[in-house]
Length: 274
Image (spheres, rainbow, N blue to C red):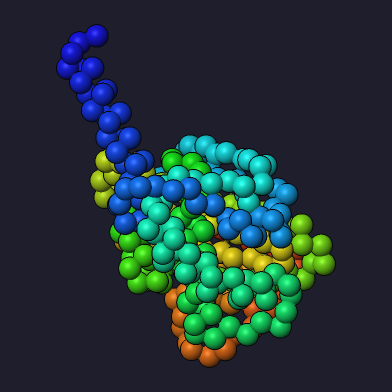
């Protein structure tokens, strides 16, 4: 093999190794393993349907490529080695501790009232979970390094994120115990030039645990928009961005089981062009 091409292959391999040896949040070394879904949730509220992670590519005429993975392994035992000891035992651990009592109230179907602090905490927790989920398939990565750093430094999602919380009416919580993440690559419409990269620039994450549903949407390019979804607006509490500081009760508009399927279809097939 030509020495030049061998050099390029080795350099690319070394660069890839360096990327995966750095924390996805702070860029530090000394990585540890972090659960995709917290261990206590995996033990107390198993997710029998596993998780699905897809990546799709679109142009202005519609979808032209799609790949995905579907794993049935219990996510309580699934770990990723992509965060450092400092982040894992520091701000991430503090966020998990702050979110746990709020989540337990939601999971146990209590009459939960969300104040400003609870909304901010849930929003940050859902974003952190979305980040961990998308790393199960590198091709679906749509959340930028800048967005991850923003969460770490500010304790809240950036302004280009929308996060919702809802509760199921169904007595059998296994109907919504599932996890979805999809990263999409949208090409700009003409006359804008095609992008030089095919990296995902739009993501949707749905986390269903016990009777609670969490939905996160984001895009980091200015020719896309987070189009309104009526099912979200009518059946969920929007916890980010916070439009008003009043109290909210996510279990007031409990979601029928069939709504979940409509929501899934709407979110995963939504065209995001302005």
